[in-house]
Each structure stands twice: as structure tokens, then as C-alpha cells.
Image (tube, rainbow, N blue to C red; front, top):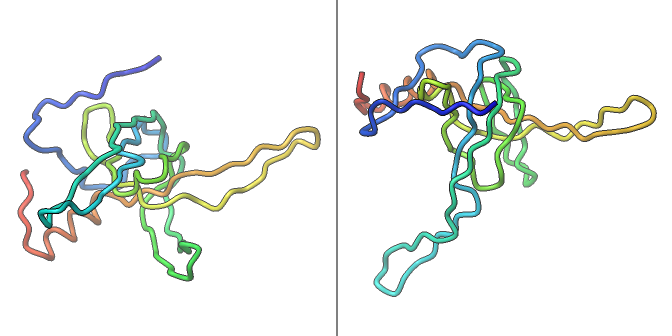
Length: 147
């Protein structure tokens, strides 16, 4: 059953100040496959944009080091969600059913194979950066956010 995310104020979004509870229903969102190119006037053009929303839920809290495949390692501190977004959705918000941003897409876990001996599936989960780290970053850089 699909539920609509409730955005009461379209001027801004609220950021959750604590780590979301395991089992919380969330929506992974973003704009995959966007193409940013330079135009002849020295500006930027944005094309290939489409909105994507994936219902999911918080699986677990985590802090993990991820490798981008080219030797660059990053630490993601936040939580895992069951479903992950498409390439190009990194940085997209993860919202709860009230429209509160609980995190931001950060990375995808390494594929794992799960098998019952007869059938195998590949499992990947998204790693989300928790909103309170974003709030701390904004405060450290003296960027005001609506209360």
C-alpha cells in the first residue's frame, strides 16, 4: 500500500535532529541520470532529469568505510535502508512519511550473495548519512537553517 509523503511547507524541508529508529518507513528520492554540461554562454545546462521515489525502511544504524573503486575511501555515518537509489541519486534526501528529511543518500553497500542452496540473490543496501550530521555541518559553517 502506497502512502503519500506530507510536505506541509514547500518553502523548505525539516531535518531530523536524531538518528531515525530502525523500522521507520522512509522514501529514497533523487534525480538519477542527470546530465550537466557547459553552454556557449559559460553557464551550465541541466538535462536528462527525472524524479525517482523508492519506498523503503531503515534497516540498521551503521558507520562504514566505502571505496569508490578508484582508491578514494569515505566514512559514512548513518543508517542502512533496504532499497537503494539509482546512479546519480547520491546526495538526494531520504524522507519519512511526514516529509521530514532523516538522511541523505551517501553510498551503496558492496553486493553480497545470499543463497538457500538452490537459489541465490544479490543483496545491496543504501547507506544514508544521518541528518544530524548535516545539521552539525551547517552549524559549523554558520549556515542558518529554518527551525
